[in-house]
Structures are given as C-alpha cells and as structure tokens.
Length: 313
Ligand code: NDP
Image 1 (cartoon, rainbow, N blue to C red):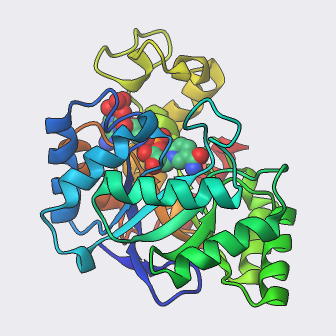
Image 2 (cartoon, rainbow, N blue to C red):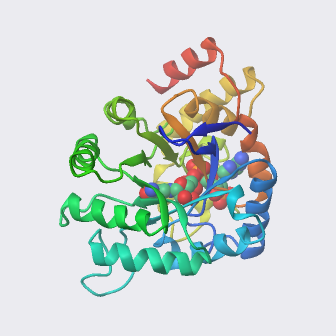
C-alpha cells in the first residue's frame, strides 16, 4: 500500500481507503464487516470512513467495534455530520448546536476520544458558514477532532470557507469528499483546479460506481443475487443503463491489456490524479479488498489512459 498526504497536511493516509455506507451496520452482516475491516488493515489500509447518518449510527458502532483491537495511532478515522438524525428541528444540518451534539454522539458510538477527520456531509444554506467553521474550530481546540473537511460542496462554497477561515484565523478545511469515477467525472471541471489552488485534497467516494466498474453487471444478464444492485432498498439498478454497461465492456479490454481487473483499472485511473488523497472504496467481503488494494502504486500506460479517454468520451 502506498500513502499520500491528506490534502496539504502532514497526515499520511492509504491511497485506498475503506468506507461503510450501506454495507457495515447495513446489508453486510457484522461478521463479514469485521472480516473486511481486518483484511483492509492487514493489507495496509489505514484510513476508514463512516458518518453519523449511515444506518442512523449503526455503521459507526460496527466500525468502532472492529477497529477497537488496533492501536489508535495506527489508523485514521473519519466521520461526518449533517444528515437527519431525529425528527426535531435541530436534528440535522450544520448549526453549532447540532455539530457539538453529534460529534459527542459519534465519539460515543465509535468508542473513541477523538476522530481524525470530521466532515460537513453536505453544504447547509440555512447556517452561516462562519457559525459552522467556529464550531468545528472549537472541536479542534477541544481535541475531539484533528482535521476538518467537507463533502460535495461546490468550488464556490469551498472558496468562501477558505477565505473566511483565513480572515477569522480559524482552522481550514483540508479535504473535500466528492463522487468521482470513470462514470462520474464532474469534479475535473472546477473542483480539482480550485482545490489545487487552495491546497485541498479529494477523498473520492464510489470510485467503482458502487460496483458497476467491476464488470459484474452485464448487459442483458440478470443481476447477481449477492450484489448491491440486488438489494431491494438501494436504487442502483437504475444506473445499469445500456450506455454504462457498454462502456464497462470496452473498459474490460483495456484492463486485460494492462493485466489488471476492471476494478483495479478503475482505481488506478482515479489515483492518476495527484489532487486525489485517497480512493474511498466499499467492500462487502474481504476478497474484494484483496483485489482492489492491488491498484495501489500502479501507473497506467499512456496508451491505456488514451484508450480509457476514448471510451469515456
Ligand atoms: P464503491 O464504488 O467502491 O462500491 C463498493 C461496492 O462495490 C462494494 O460494497 C461491493 O458491493 C462492490 N465491490 C467492490 N469491490 C468489488 C470487487 N472487487 N468485485 C466485485 N464487487 C466489488 O464505493 P461505495 O459506493 O461503497 O462508497 C465507498 C464509501 O464512500 C462509502 O462506504 C462511504 O464511506 C463513502 N461515501 C460517501 C458519500 C458522501 O456523500 N460523502 C456518498 C457515498 C459513499 P457488493 O459486493 O454488495 O455488490
């Protein structure tokens, strides 16, 4: 496993990280969740991601229990705040009150004294950015949070947060967590250039497009029963369009020419971007992690990159 700086910070994170959305505390049994987290740790993944809102706190509990056996200094744990955690008017968003309460609740569920990275899960137009940044800065002063980030904020919103932090001498956001994969490339336009300018890194989620970029969903074939798309409550099948599946078939040939699986090609392609701090994958079983981590350190040939570009056009 290779490690990269988290944005411009001194912190090193594995360039492939493991998340817990839908899976841990969700459709993956706890035994498999723990086995996957253990496999990731064993293979050098030191960066784990969760959120308060994932299965309303259950994901944090499962991830916290699995990591408890490892030295706290040996892994980097990220969680998030924003999503709805209750029915009250203050049970969501980025107000000082909600952030302070949710950080304590997350720490309790995780069984930790601090989280390494705390994200604003989305932008909240109803809360002044300064209120949010001050609350996050206080959490850093209190030692409950070490670094702060945002997820799916626009370039404009991130720029405003950076300027405000500098003006008010508050801690800066160091990373953004956007969606990025061969099938979803929006961040290349504005987010990456603006982030580079401000020293913000990307921890990109769903680099395998939730499994589509492993090649296991095929045009005209039935959906494998043990896959995410087969879960009733997850609307993944709507992304299995003919267009996407045809691209996937073409990408498989590029992967084969590079002696890689399609999942490995998709992750190595993400990691070609120097602004990416980590590719944040999910896994329902340890074997997927064994396959995916092999993308670390792979440099794709110029021919492969050109071919991918042609297919994605
Ligand atoms: P991926 O695109 O990596 O999809 C992961 C899923 O693909 C796995 O659960 C598994 O599903 C399948 N898969 C992975 N590897 C393989 C393989 N080698 N062969 C076959 N199937 C494979 O990422 P996710 O969509 O899971 O997102 C990753 C993380 O990003 C989340 O856990 C979360 O932490 C974060 N995230 C953040 C968001 C945000 O708003 N900030 C939004 C979404 C995610 P299966 O076996 O069940 O088919």
